[in-house]
Image 1 (tube, rainbow, N blue to C red):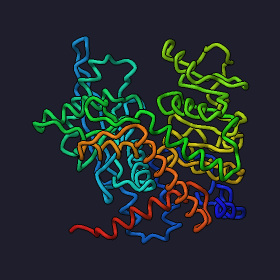
Image 2 (tube, rainbow, N blue to C red):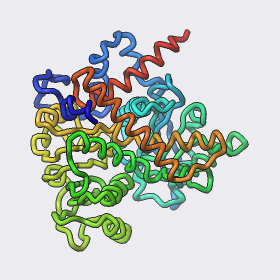
Image 3 (tube, rainbow, N blue to C red):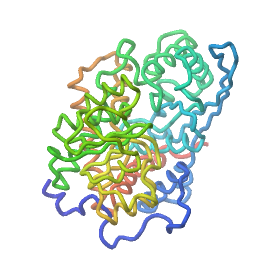
Length: 440
C-alpha cells in the first residue's frame, strides 16, 4: 500500500474543479439523466470523440411489453414491462429484473447503463442490460407473480439468451423468479438452458455464494478503502439504510469483521443502538414481523435521520437518490459504500468530495453480484459447480483488483472515486467499441 499513500485519500483533490453542471435550485433526480451526467464526466476525463460519446450514452435496444395477467379472482390485469440493452460491445447483456410500482423506463435505462459500466469496471465479459415490471408484488400472490413472470419471459424471449442477454434478480425478484424464467425459456426452445438467467436455485444450476455476493463484494471493497484511509474495520461504526438481501447480508458480514452495526432501516423506518445491533437478531425479527422497527434493544429512527447520523461507514442499500443536494451537507460518515444503484446524485457527490467523505461508487461497490453471476454463467456453460471457497477467492481477487484499478485512475486523472471508476469502465467499453467498429 506504500504507493497508495501518495494518492489523495479517496476524495476529489483540493482545488480540483467541479465536474458536474452548476448547482441550481432544482436538482436533477431523473436516474437516466444522472447516469448520463456521470458518463459525460468520464467521457470528458478520457477526451472521447463526440461521435463515440453519442454511441456509448445511447441504449442499443429498448423493448416495452404489455403483460395481461389473470389474477386469482379471475379478472385480467395488464402490467407493463421493460427490457433495455444498453451496450453489448464486450459481451452479452447482463442485468436484473425488478418488480416495483414505481418502475419507469428512464429508471430501467439508467440501471442498464450502470450495468454496462459495472461489468466493465470489474472486467467481466458482459455488456449492460436491465428489466422491470410496473407492479406491486407485495399485493400479489405467488401464483399471480408466476403467471406474470412467465408471460414477461415469453414476451422478452426474442432478445434474451445465454449468448445474448442474461437476466438476474433485482428488487422484489429472487431465485424463484429466475427459475420461472429459466423454465419458460427452456420450454419455448425445447431443451433445458440453465445459462439464460443467473441467481437461480442451486438445484437447477445456481452458483454457491450468489445470494451473498453483492454484500461480500462490498465488504472486500470496504476493507481496501479502510486500509487506504487508515480506518480499523474492527470497532468501526456502520449504519445501513435498506435491510433487504444486500443490506442484511452486509450487516452480518461486517459484524463478522467486528464492525459495530449502530443503525438499520427498511421501508417502514429504522432502529439504532450506539452499543451495537446484532444483525442475526434483526434478520430473525424482520422475518417474523416484516420490519426491523420495534425490535427489542433498539430505539426507533427515521430513514432520513439514519443517513445523517455520525458513523464511520454508511451503506445505502435501498433505492436511488437518497443522498442528494438536500442532505449531503449533513452526511457525517467517513465512507459511503453504495450497495444500492444510484443512491447519490452528482451534486451530492461534489459536496461529499469537498467535505472529504469517500464515496465508494455503486458500479464498483455492489459489483460482487454481477461478478458471481458471471461465475454462475461460466459454470453453466462448462457444466461445473465450484464450492463456496473457490467462488469467494475468485470474487475477492476481482474486487480488490478493480479497487486498485480505480485508485490508479484517480492518480492518473486527478479525479474522485466515481469519476475514476467510470473512466476505467468507459475506457474499456470505448476500446471494445472502436475495435469492433460500426456496422454496416
